[in-house]
Length: 80
Image (cartoon, rainbow, N blue to C red; front, side, top):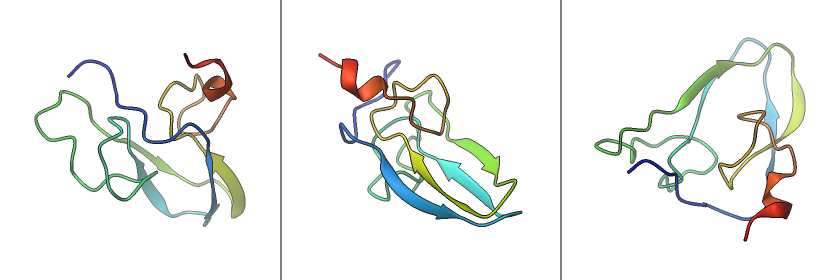
């Protein structure tokens, strides 16, 4: 698998906690979107692990086409 699956055609609003580490799903197969549940195993795609710098609400990408992973940049609006 070289291209991720589109999990949804819109971002999801989440609350991030400062200092907490998250694993954002890159493959689109996770049932725990937008976070990784290990479904990527064998796909060649790994989650993006990041630590929140501050506590805040954020919109995380679910279409997997963002250029600002894990955050939405509106790329879902241009999907075919």
